[in-house]
Amino acid sequence: MEWIKDGNLDFLKKRKIEAREEAQKSVAEIIAKVKSDGDQALLDYTRQFDGIGLASILASEADKNEAVRHVPEPVLAAIKQAAKNIYAFHKKQMPKSWTEPAEQGVVLGQKVTPLDSVGVYVPGGTACYPSSVLMGAIPALVAGVKRVVLVSPPQKNGRIADGVFAAANEIGIDEIYQVGGAQAIAALAYGTESIRPVDKIVGPGNLYVMLAKKQVFGDVAIDSLAGPSEIAIVADEASDPAWIAADLLSQAEHDRLSMPILVTVSEAFGKQVEQEVMKQLKDLPRTDIASESVNRQGKIILVSGLSEAAQVINSIAPEHLELATGDPHALLPLIRHAGAIFLGKYSSEPVGDYFAGPNHIIPTNGSARYASPLGVESFIKRSSIIEYSNDALQANGQAIAAFARFEGLEGHARAVEKRMEGAVVHG
Image (tube, rainbow, N blue to C red; front, side, top):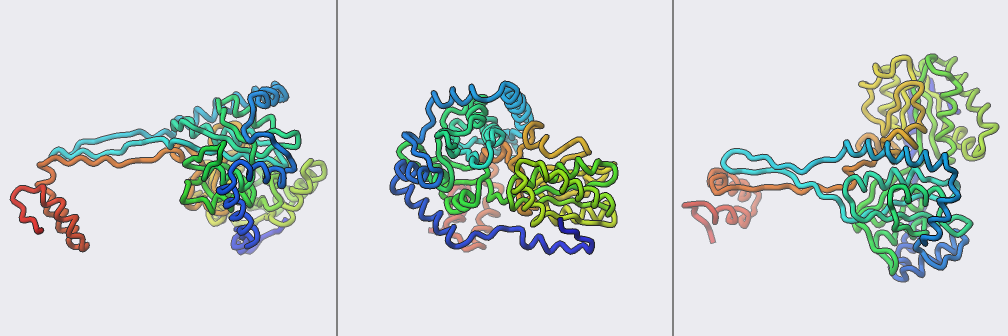
């Protein structure tokens, strides 16, 4: 891990992953092919990229039932309880429609309406992510979205990962398609013979998924352009170095580009954590991925005090932030930019990834400066409500017309004046 003792955070300038022109061109070609050839393009790309020949993109009931039978009972129980926790948390986020009367018969308000349809992308490949099913779909269901579609690449056995099916079954998602990559994003955005298009696409994915979401944005809404996972931990001697090392590795094992960062006031403690990281890497199943992440992206930042620690964190704006200090609540008010904040030495990041209830689809690459985790508000839209009585229009019409004419919009002014008693209307 790289040590930073002089406050130089220039590494943040290199955090964003720039896609090569060839990758962007390849994604554009995939999208165009799906738009023109529909299901056949999806089948062809699944054979080309995943090495699997499918008879149908749509997951069958037999596959769903068979998959659930392969998931161990303790895991099914964990999925069930996690779903309850996630539902409970997100129900508290639900905004409401409202109207409010004002003077002279004016009524103002907002109407909250859920989106009609949403596509949830669940990654496949090197791991199985039933947690992404719960985190992507439950807020949409709480918001009232009627059609929630799931897409995920098939495994080597020719079907979606068993755990993904189990999670979808637990929350009642039954429109599931066995397709991944940029082609899945294109299908959700533009539709094929089997897949009707959706209004919004959410969920993490690899570089090609991210580029596809970027290219279809505008024709369809997206949640974000997610980058590699990242964790920053502010810790001192109040925490166990082995625990902190394990938390850093929990994110390093995600991706070779993941960024694990320790911020500490104690050089001795930092060295203990660094030693533990190297020790624990030896028997970590995904050690190749985690080692590259630690060696290329890992940082230990030495600060003079907790005030400087907060400044560093606000500059990083990390996806995940652990405040594992003696008094994390004292540090919390100083934190302005972080996706999810874990307080205290027992609040390990995986608690939030899987179980606690808040969403684990969180802004990355510093976008926590202006963005929020996925939530119910991600799946609703607001319409403004404006009702003016005759008295209100008579009282305010001249001001409105004057404003419109100042902007050079005579038609706007006349639209108001035609309704005003005694007004001189031009034209």
